Length: 118
Image (cartoon, rainbow, N blue to C red; front, side, top):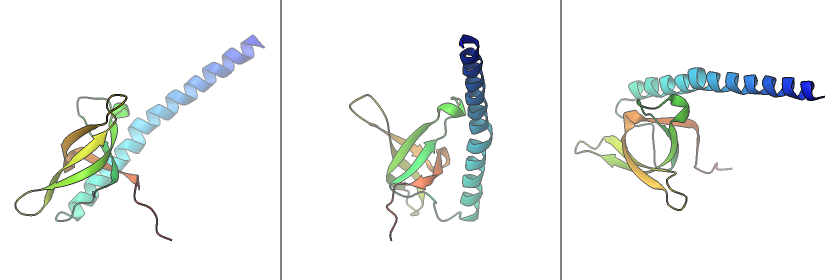
């Protein structure tokens, strides 16, 4: 019985490692590429809006550890285009942290926080 549990534990560990690897290499890459292509197609229109849930791209951190955040405010420049956003991320246990990030550093995920109208 002990050997069976040990084998099962090793198998589950390998499955988790495989899933994590696929998440990092396939899904996050695909999501980022899709976001870039969409931005290029819609150069004048940003595809991020207030309330969206986004992944914060960080070149100095492994993709598996990029933070999730919620867009609190969009920042426009003189020409009226959105170039940056204020994003709320988990901070300390009691207070969230607000970060300013450029639109290029934000990858919208497939889910948004807006309620679906029926």
